[in-house]
Every structure is written in structure tokens, then in C-alpha cells.
Length: 258
Image (cartoon, rainbow, N blue to C red; front, side):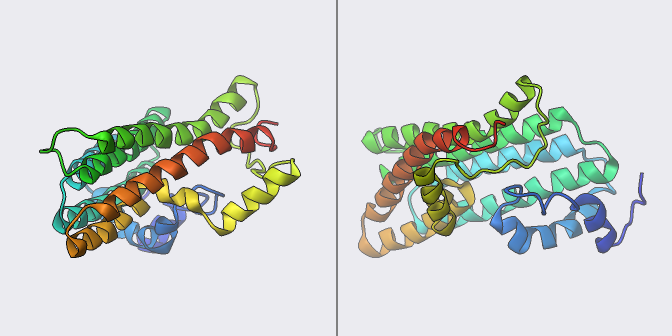
């Protein structure tokens, strides 16, 4: 095991090499500011008995608290939820870094991490459904129903990506191959390239949603109603539907299953 008090440079070389560079492996917020920050937290954590799986479990708890918090109307709750999601992102970085530094990466850890992401991202959309309907203290409305349906579609879209690895493993193909995501069909390929320039699918990511929720809450406070939060939820449902329906088509017409 490497030393317990490494330099930040050494930590980055050991824990981030090959992770940040992988295509689609890192969220833009991770590349922009969280990966530069996370080694400072990781360096302190590797000196404690905390395990990578405990950090992942804490990540899930923080994400779920954010989902509950955003369900309540008001600017303050939206800001608190957004801050909690930033902590969630930080923990998502450091759990893997601690595991790689201690050479304790495991299939169980990867499974728990993936499961946590799906649960938190779905729960956050459900929270937005409550917010759009006036909050948990209000009788359930069709906004809550829309939030629940949108959450299922968000999780489905993410599972569709995970199932590529499952399918490749089941077919005896290497699961770590960087396969081409571009469709072989001309029309679909053009749409895929358009999405690369206008990434509407980012709207259904929990980090983006938490930031949009703050903006929507501020507009709601200014207007004195919930229109902005309702528009955000409706847009999330539309985008989640497009992703859930379009993603399998793109995958099946690309080289990702070859």
C-alpha cells in the first residue's frame, strides 16, 4: 500500500489516472472543479478507518436527504438541496479514490455505487414532483404522479446504458472496450451529433436538476406561484421520455454491442 501521507500529485497519479480520461466516465462538474478538489479530502480520509463502501453509503444517504429537502417549496430548501448534491458529488469522487489508493476496488463497491446513483437520481425527480405540487404537506396531485413517472424514465435511461456492459459480458465480449457510440444509421447519427452540441439529456442529471431547481425556486418566489418548478418538472419528463426511447435505438444501431 502507498504511504498514508502522499502528495496531492501522487494521489492524482494513483487514484485519477485512467478515470478522468475515459470517454463518458466523468461528469463535467467532476472535470471542472470536483476532481481538482477531491484529492485534498481523500488524503485526509485515507488516514482514517473509513472504508470506500462506507463512503458510498454516505453518498447515497446525502443524495436521498437532498431529494427529500428539494420536495419542500421555497428558495432555502432548493439551495440546501443543491449544496447537498455537491457533497454527494464529492463523496462520489472520494469513495473511488480511497478504494484505488488502498487497492480495495471491488465488484460490490461498483454495484453499490451504481445502485446509489440510480436511486438518488430517481428520488430527486420524485422530490421535484412534490415541490411542483406544493410540497409534502399538500394532498398528492397529478404533479406528484408526473414526478414519479419521470423518475422511472430517468432511471430507465440510465439502466439502458448499464445494460450494454451486461449484454457484452453475457456475449463473452470484453466489458471495458471503449466502443463507438455513434449510430451507423445516417439520420440517427445526425441526431446523435446534434445532441452532442445541445446536450438536452443533461437536464435529467441530478447535478443539473439541483441547480435548475434553485433557479426555478427563485422565479417562483418572485412570481408568488409554482409555475417555474412545474415547468422544470414537465421539461424533465419530456427529456426523460426522449432519452428512454431514443437511447436503445442509438445503442442498437451503433458498435457498442459488437
